[in-house]
Image (tube, rainbow, N blue to C red; front, side):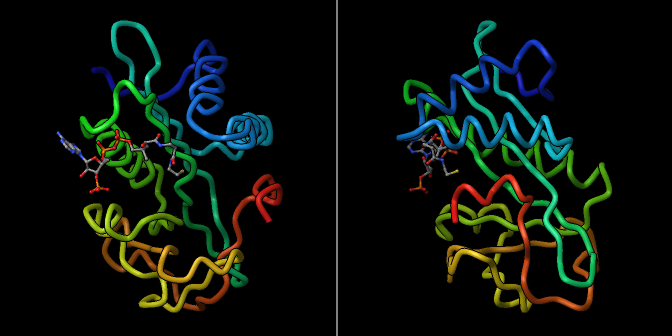
Length: 165
Ligand SMILES: CC(C)(COP(=O)(O)OP(=O)(O)OC[C@H]1O[C@@H](n2cnc3c(N)ncnc32)[C@H](O)[C@@H]1OP(=O)(O)O)[C@@H](O)C(=O)NCCC(=O)NCCS
């Protein structure tokens, strides 16, 4: 399996993977819209024998103070390729790319039992809250020492996420 950043020729395959993995095409269109808006900050694909079998997207999130972090969403792996830690490797590679891009902190809305392995912790420990009432599902981590800014509070996702409100 090859993990790599997306290129222009991957866009249709990435769309198709999300359509196949979610009940509606909302996530597929979200990724397209983030890319179009220039807010698909990190986009990593998993490729097996030339086929895109998984994808993870990261887009900027902001605090009222103007500080910018990175939000992980969505992540998908085709059903036939699941439970081989492809998602885990996509997420690790994506977080590394975010770190290299200079992002100091990351957030995710997802199952704490899964995301704890990447050092995500309840966002409430950082005094961060989300727009969706995610509760314990809203998690955060520092990508570098002291990467979490002061002046915390409400974390706003990119406007393209408004479709999920
Ligand atoms: C969520 C999703 C991306 C996970 O993909 P994946 O490649 O199967 O993920 P991983 O292999 O890293 O881990 C998934 C689970 O498989 C387990 N697993 C990993 N390798 C395993 C193995 N060799 N044997 C058994 N289980 C294994 C992991 O422990 C994890 O289980 P847990 O959450 O109960 O701890 C995939 O199921 C998917 O695309 N779902 C639909 C879209 C979705 O809901 N995305 C998340 C919200 S954005």
